[in-house]
Image: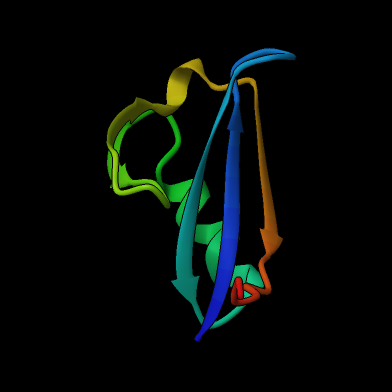
Length: 71
């Protein structure tokens, strides 16, 4: 399983980030596409719960994320 960072941009200054675990970039894209114009809910990396209306998002960016452990 790979980890992907999904960033939802509302404007130039406001965004929210979500991490998902799927097998490929294509599956990550399909998941995000299937959630278009819907409310989704998730916890961010700090454990904060979010409900997001994807209809209000201007740009969605997906990239594979390679987590490094902090020492």
